[in-house]
Amino acid sequence: MKQSMRFTNAAWGLLFISPWIIGFAWFQFYPLLLSLYYSFTDYSIVKATHFIGLQNYVTMFKEDKDFLPSLRVTFLYTVIAVPLKLAFALLVAIILNSKGRFINVYRTMYYLPSILGGSVAISILWRFLFMREGIVNQVLSFAHIPAVDWLGSPNVALWTISFLVVWQFGSSMVLFLAGLKQIPADLYEAGMVDGASRIRMFGSITVPLLTPIILFNLVMQTIGALQEFTAAFVVTNGGPMKSTYLIGMKIYDDGFKLLHMGYASALSWVLFAIILILTLLIFRSSRSWVHYEDGGKN
Image (cartoon, rainbow, N blue to C red; front, side, top):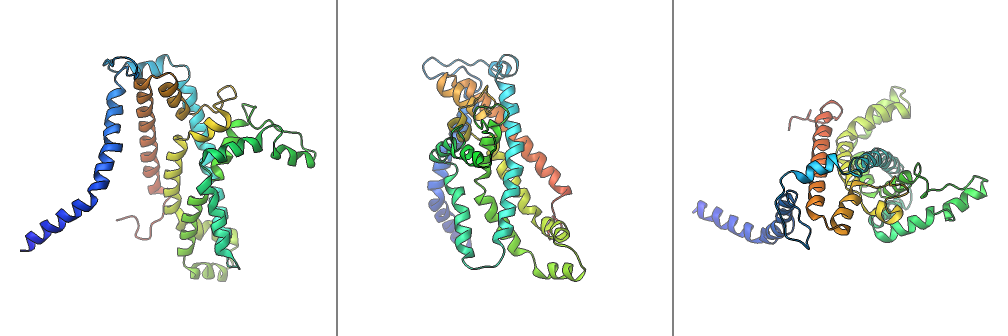
């Protein structure tokens, strides 16, 4: 009787979850496998597809002059954007963790950039803000600071699009804020009794207890930064001199402009392997700097 009930419950469970399973299988898992197959072909939509083995991967590393530079730009962009975003999100979370009137309204307002920041419209707005005659340079002119070529200088353009991502700090900030709420107040009281400064308590209490959330945010933001496309495509279109030509843009150009779908699939799988390796390295390193209440046994 109990076995029959379990079977019935399992059948109902599978029935209710079946729309998600079908959607995942058809829209994610099947395309994933198909792209892996295409990465070993010369698939180009308009021509017959032929199996060419590892030729796409060999071409990528030996003949494609844009592949390694675009990877270098993507790594540099990740190194700039992710730490800045996490630091800014933590700073705002600490400010919003204070008590005051209308604090919930402020929290909602600070979360709005996270909702809007990834849209094409906001990227276009960013381009107008930082163009040579844009508002940012006009504000600088009031302080008699020379205009900066935010989008036209190869040394500055990557920082400009990184600031756009930093502006999308909302989701990370919410997680940091939730973590700050979980830190027992008596730890700070004990620190104050011992005469510890605010900076000392931040380094000895706040940061260690936030390390699990820092780890989660670091992994998620690193994955997102390595896949970034919208900011570079809309704001700078990969320029100037390909100083913002991220690997996401290269995959788009090879796949949808040159119609080299097989080659673009190979690029995507190399990017997937890089993201996987970096994620594993971050988790591996977390053993030495992440603090868990249970010692990380579970």
